[in-house]
Length: 219
Image (cartoon, rainbow, N blue to C red; front, top):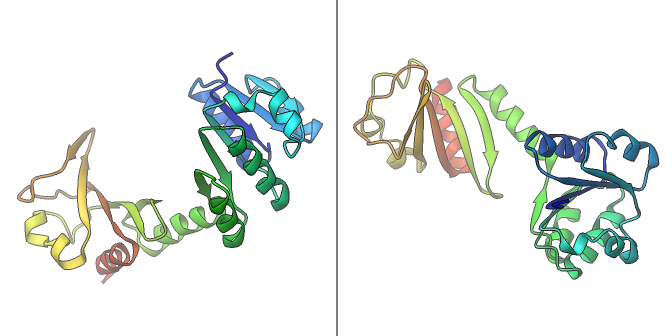
């Protein structure tokens, strides 16, 4: 079995990752200390096992040091999450992605070498808030603490104008990196191209600048 992915913690978050990776036809080892949770994934994951990942011997027995990608999705036990992450990095796992419960947890994870710290509740909250605040916002993806990518539907206010006319970069400091037009995607669009109603603008920039642009659409 090509054990490229391992998911530790099979709650809602970890379980959803296992399911999606299997949809993508990836081999996934699913691990949890709870036998009932493991049993739920026996027929979903490539392999599902019961194990306490705060025990280095268990990690070695599972061969987790040979995995390229391990996702630590342990629920409310911050101590177990931190110890598991530390042991995985000591074993030489190339990429350890960890679910953080709060900012303090995230800072500790970053200090001990987590490659990717995930804030599912916070990030989902931001995405929903942006969608609620502007009917034009279709999706919102955080790239860092200060920068994001946002998809915005071009409505009447933007239609029949070019990027040059709108002067978005000079006015707001954000860039349109692509335009989705039906089934087509225009990458690095020419600034003279006219925006059509229901085009989807894919924009990147500082969060504050993106928010200013979103607000301008509602005025």
